[in-house]
Image (spheres, rainbow, N blue to C red):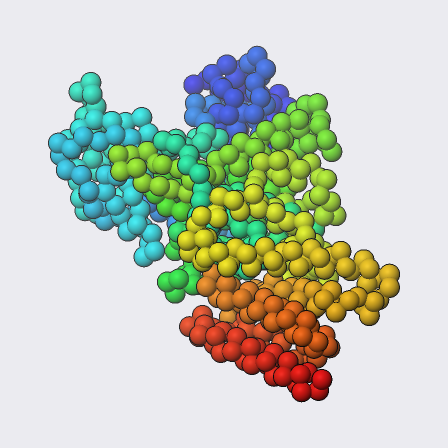
Length: 590
Ligand code: ADP
């Protein structure tokens, strides 16, 4: 195809004319350096191109080569383990070849062409197959069985299927389509990142994505296939929340898209992630994780692409029938990239200079989450949960990115700096956060954990609400002015906050709480409360209750290892006994 010609360079934006052969969202190669770019606007034969590499040194008149293809990723075995940049270039290989600074125009494919995979067919010649059917599997890592699927749009009869060691570009099957035409199938396929991958239908997510974080699992749960937003000011714990979810959420595949605010922050992720251990298998977490990293010294446009690259890879594993969780930290950087490109295109700005289509883009992104019936005759179920951090300037929730995100996601974990200052972590506010999935989950929770759990969660939230109201009064007239039952509410609320909600991500035991342990811990706190209520009614002074040494047992209960959960029954007995003694003492005195 005839190359176009640069007429203008403005930072990451390049304008070229003579681009009649190009469509919007096509990839182009800019100048003899072959820098990668994507057409984001066409006016006549003039294309505006966002360039994913530094544009320094580009001049007017340099050629622009169309590729005729939309910005796409490679899909196939080998996606897990390499660390990618926003346009799926393997950073670790680039660093080996080119050192720390990315050499411009470097063209390394997303999937290794040399790695051999042992393909085990699950169909045989003569079988009828359709899009999404599993042709066979390869063991991608010890933790991930990769299902090689019939690509979308292909159906017919298997003519040939070749087991054994193959590189991704080898032909592993031949499918004869309904017109008698042979289609060669390899393990590698390509998919345009801005187009959602197809599925049969979306189904209602009804199962929790357990995260091991009590405030989330108990109060503001997310489902497998759900969406959540974590906005919060700098230092409030967004990154720790995302890392905790990556480590502990019961998803089979984790996709982590990091758009670093500061260069070293991403470096932390790059260093930290490879050291993490998968708690379920003891293997490195990287063996089921896809890491996409944009350091801040990479051009802003690459961040824009990275969320699409990430979600496309996530959809691909969802299509295999896995539960996938994608974390994007932080989507504000993505929105800022949009704003910068929009400004350079001289589009009419919307709120705070963000483009008018900000809300649409954000909605389209989160729409790609969900629990789905995958393509393929076996009707397997896949789920893609998406959790986006947002870092609004000054933590201001009226920020357009926060607002646009809250319009589409169903869970809001509101991180508050007030809590972070008090070292209450996770600093997720129990008063302003919400989960719209609670009704969807009720049936599941009822079945698994019974009515008592659902009631306990409601009581605990009600006590915390009441505490917030009473705090006003306490501020005006002091704690002593409260009636004994209200003082008990204050005591129990404190216990819910400190003994249940507070969870130290850096403590070996407390970092993760199974559902079972969480249920038991809540039972302890509320058992104490209900016995205390009874005792108050029997005339026990509230100070005596507050001074009971069993409170200390409750405070330490969260450090009980998962294999010693029977301890909780012992603590309950101790609490019951303590209250019995108290009541007897009061009776004896009376
Ligand atoms: P952000 O990404 O919002 O800027 P971070 O996630 O980096 O904030 O958290 C800031 C600091 O807060 C962490 O370095 C850590 O010391 C503390 N922190 C956050 N969450 C927790 C937690 N769950 N347990 C213990 N400490 C936490």
